[in-house]
Length: 400
Image (cartoon, rainbow, N blue to C red; front, side, top):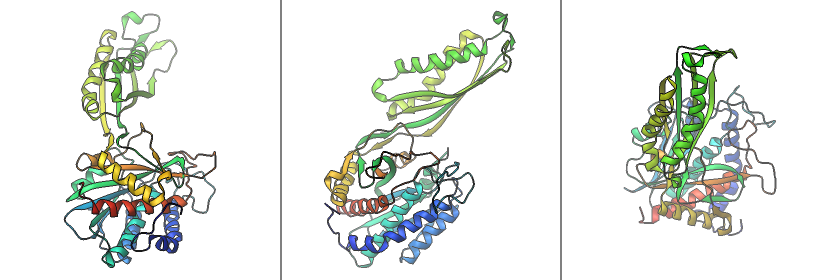
């Protein structure tokens, strides 16, 4: 590959002999997806592959995830992949189409898992020859798509013990395979949910003054609360409050006694995220108070924002340039989506990057969380290259 330098252990040769095997593993995982926290067969497959390579994988307490150390040393560089699939129908016509009704790897976690496994298998050979100058930890995590998600459970199980820095990647169909996107600072947003249930006596639409007009009150919440929030939080915090569901009433001429609205709150700034529940709850109550309705508010934490560490981002950017060529590394866009990799970054410095998965030269983009999502499978080799270079650079640097 242009711009790539051979590593100790002949990574080019290793990928040439193992690339087809990795693609086959990805296709097997894709065809046999498992929902959040049910990733038992996927975890067992990963553990078997690592054990065959001479490593000593450890199952997480529930058996739905794997942790595996490679090499020696007190200071550990960790890499994380997520194992779970989504409750979506796989609409693709491919030999590796999901065999599980209503479950599909529509977010690329099968690729994340395969890339991390490839890193482990490649580093196992380096370690066997004494060419791995440090210790690397692989974390195969369950439940990234769930709320509450799996990262806190993995951390509680000790996966970050002695870890100096942690890295991850995420499939990104907007970039062609062969490119990666890197940035320091805000990378993905915090993602919380808020629901409001309004109650009142109900009544006739001819006499709204004799009751609490819940539809009017819901309209006030839907329009006024996001607008007020924009004026109460620093615009630089990157706040987005969007309602996705509203329900009230059955008859056109009857004011209902119950109404509900729910949506998401996404925030790029960590301090603003910490302040959001109290502020949003107060804004909702202030808006509802004049209407006479009773409000029951549920604010549910999702994930914090992913904020990439400056040094960690620099290390993986340099490694990606060495692995793929400097012209193959671009600046990643900020996403308002959520990622529970953020929980790891509450404990140790680290960075997530975007792995290009689009077909080069094609205008067709199979977006994430869609039933037709698929990847250009050459992205697996590119991801392994970047991770191997990153591991060697990170264990060799004293930055962490």
